[in-house]
Length: 608
Image (cartoon, rainbow, N blue to C red):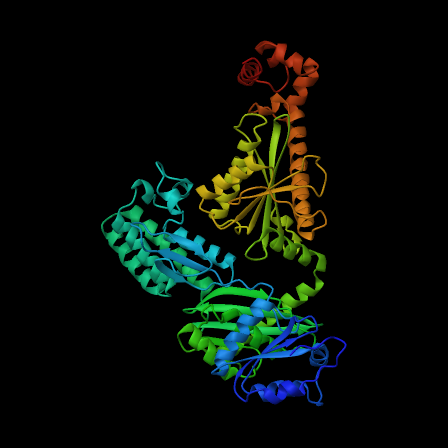
């Protein structure tokens, strides 16, 4: 039944025909658009409550005033209605429902099983491949950090099969001791399988057993006088213990997610802490879009349904507020996950402190969100949409090259996060050992130096790598990151258009064919321009400093034993550098403080 905007909506004919059983109802406006989706244990009673003359909050009054039709779907159970409600909200995104802007699934660590030498990898999406999936982790950064820790202790390969199968020599991973080079037969299958087994045990939460086994092997190696092997095992044990200390959660058992919600001035923040096998895998922050007047318990209910249905929930969820219809939500999550899922809000002891910690983090994140300029958030959100990224990038790194006709080449790396420039993470690289003016070689050298250090744990891996240049520079970045097995980073090349005007930038995205352009007024393009221009400024500043230093540098400064006072005495005695170059050894010895040995060294240095 549909009504025109001019006609007052009469709900009575619809209400008379509504069944008493469970189901899903959809509120439609005058244009036929769905503005709200809800589920009910009793459709007739629930839908009728909207049109009674009883008091409603402002959100409900506004919604009911726009309703021109109501559609229903009858289900067998309330849990089935919840699942259907969740799917409809994800599909139609009604304006009066609580919506998640970032609706991507959690990432996992994937350990393959179909190869002689299995690989560890970052994974997001369906889990159908042969092997094991460990997680979920709260963010891509948490996965990368764990993979980096694992690779330091257990050098299991992380490269793609196409890269692995075509090697004729070890890659950089072997050189920095992050891989045992199974691709070229540097490690036996038995030894490699042992490392894989230890990785599985660690990710299953059985790190104590791994440490015990390593201790026994270390003691045996020491007794056999194999001190180098014993030292290597000792370092592994120490690294594992450090990982345990950083991830251990007191009193934690099993799989638990701690979820807290805070509200301020109509903005909602949900904080999720992920605990698996007693290990804290980190936390993740969400800012769901909620209509004015929505309460924290309602937001938590909607968040849990949207976030976990279709993406297996842990065995227990600890929440900061009471949730209405908790039993229905537990039933739907349990059926979807294939195991019992319990939701608890009134907890004591250590678990209460976990919830308080999550609430405290939510408050801080909300305060930061409120104080951060809204334009920065819009830029990142628009960039995610414009580039088709899985999630909003949390860390962007950009590289640029600066030189004057090949002289004093300097590469810059600038870093941005959601709050803007992260200047403490900026880096410059003085480029050497290349043909003057070879920008491709300069870019490759800078990237290799930067991301070798990143692989060694000196800095986080970025979500987006921006290269100031076209296809050639982009190819250098792809090659370096593949060599270092950083395969989950989005790489974008940005170059000026044919007329080199701002707003006409051409984008090349690794792995995608063709060129891309964003609208000149797109906030996402403004963000890329800001990052690119900052990298350009930082590179030019470094280049000018290096060039100026080289041009004012005296060859006398390179001679050992010739300090500032003696250099000044030489230049004053001979009237300048040319006079010093023409002088013989005996002439040089006449200058106070210049011995025969030093005079000979000066003469040889200046005259080849």
